[in-house]
Length: 145
Image (cartoon, rainbow, N blue to C red; front, side, top):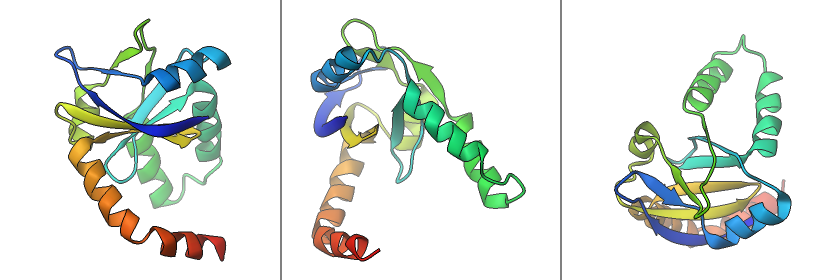
């Protein structure tokens, strides 16, 4: 559903703009509301409401008696906030999430199929550089699962 990599700045009001391609997908699919939260690898995860509910259900089915489950759920859900982009596709990213992802002014918004990820530009460039060197090996290992 969401694909591509887009560079955007955070404006003075702390808003980020959803890329035009993503807005087109949202318009076609009737998506108005998203949930954003702490992601992995120091990025912010952004889910459509439907995908959020699906993820939420998966986590609800995990045993809360396990310490790892409790810790993950606390980090994931305590950071969550719902957002509705305005007509120009802008939405506010809370400061605590920008701090978590180390986003100051420049962000990279990427589509990862069922979710969107928001990265600090320098963090993304480092991640991409490190991962691109091992991309083929990662693919080979994944295909052997």
